[in-house]
Each structure stands twice: as C-alpha cells, then as structure tokens.
Amino acid sequence: MFIIRPKKIYRIPRFSEVFGWDFLHMINNRTVFVLSLLLASHCKGPTKSSESRTDISINVIASHPHDQNAFTQGLFFKDGFLYESTGGYGTSSLRKIIPSTGEIIKNYTLEDRYFAEGAVFWNTDIIQLTWKSGIGLTYNETPDGFFLQDKNFTYATEGWGLTSDFTHLIMSDGSEKLYFLDPVSKEILRVLKVSSNGHFVRNLNELEYIDHQIYANIWMKNEIAIIDPQNGLVTARVPINPAELLGDLYEKLGPEDVLNGIAYEPQSKHIFITGKNWPKIFEITINK
Image (cartoon, rainbow, N blue to C red; front, side):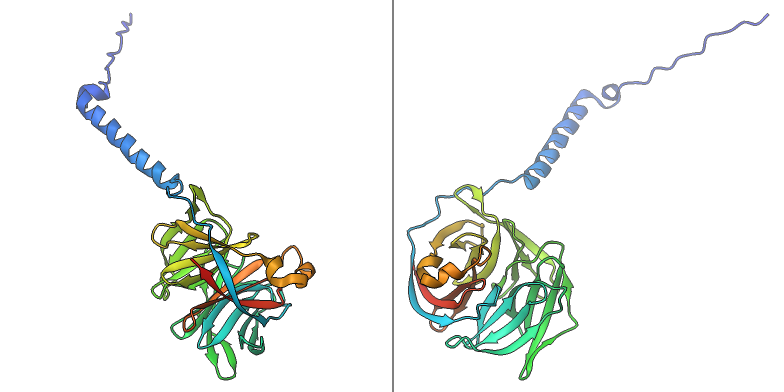
C-alpha cells in the first residue's frame, strides 16, 4: 500500500515583509521623481515671455543687382565681399560677389547630388551645409577660386541655415531648434528651442549673428526674427514687404521665391537681405 503525503507548500514572503513599507514607499517616490524629470526633459514647452516686439521698421539704404537665377540659401560678408550659397539639384553653388554690382568673381558648382544650403566663414575655412544629404562641405578660398577640402562632416538632421557666434557654429534644420556645434569636431554642444509669445517658432531658415543676437529668416514668412541666444526667445520680429521692395519685379517671382538671405557688414553696420531668385539685394538698417 502506498501512502501519498501532501507536499509541503512554502509561502514566498511579500516584498513589503522583507524590506518594509517605508523602504517600498521611498522607492516609489524616487521612481516617480526620476520619471517626472525624464518626461519634463522631453516634453518641455516653450519658454514663457512677454510678447515679441513688432513695432520695428527698416530703412532701405540702397538696392544692388542680384542674379535672378540664384536660389539663395546662405549669405554672409567677409572683407567687403558677399558670399552666397545657392541651392537646387544641379544648380547649387558657392559664390563670391561684388556687392555694389552683383558681379560674381568666384564660383564653385557642386555635384548634382547636393542641394546646397547655409554657409559661414570659420577661421580659414568656408563651411557649407547640404539639405537632405546630411553632409557638410568645407572649402579653402584661393586666388583662383574655391577648393573643396577632404574634410566633410555629417549630421543627422536636415541642413538649413548656418552662422557663427565666434565660438560655435549655429545651425538650423527647419524646425524650432538651433544647434550649437563645436567648430572643429562639429559635435552638438547645445540645442536651443526658439519660441515667441508662448509658441515654438518653426521653419527657422537662413541665419546671421549680429550684435550678440541671432537673426533668422522663417521659411514662407515675410519677416526676420531676432532671437536671444541664451533662452531662445524671439525678442523682435522685423516685417519685410517684398512687394514694396521689389515693385513691379515682384510679380515675376514664383511661389518658392521667398525672402531668404541675411548678411551683416560690420564696418557700416548695414544688413544685406535678399530672397530666392530675387533680382535685387537690399542694403538696410533696422529701426529698433
């Protein structure tokens, strides 16, 4: 005869019985706190501010000729000359221009696979972004033209605008973000979100650094945003009226031929503005 004895059942103690309710409560509180920090860092809204100033106007000092086939993506001044980056697949270029006449005295045509975007001078190099290739190009300027160096760099976003605060490269990607890059390694050191009146400002395009502020074109908007580089707040919006500036020439522009291009001439403190395929560059000052 077999006697079947029941197996002994061992009860697993509860977590609270081993460590105590106080410890469990402390763990829960810390977990909630850490999760709150993580969520706040990813869901941070626009910086609160007073309203951006809009009571600002411009003075047009002069207008200068501009190649109407230049799809302007980047513009900057150096040593009395304008440098322009033009976009388009098969039509992208880097140019050196005499401002008063619009004469192109140096020109580099990019490979057809690149759509050029913003450009800036750094140290002895000219750095130029491309739109969707994720590749930045680096040039030397020689007496005979521009020499493309074997110093390409990559980035994970689209490339739109580019400027420098003399310490970093500052790049836009068409969102509300500005990326502050190490000018040598091109590592992202800081990301700044731009906002105005409690809302993010997206489609940030061509950039220029003027008197410790970032000036930005906003794609498809007839205005220039002046941005505080410390907190990302738009302190002022400068209205630009292309129809008023161009007169009858405005009627010849296409829907993509929007305001784009800001260059600062530090000697005169004048700002040069233009647009994609515009026949003119305008030399202006801003009444603040």
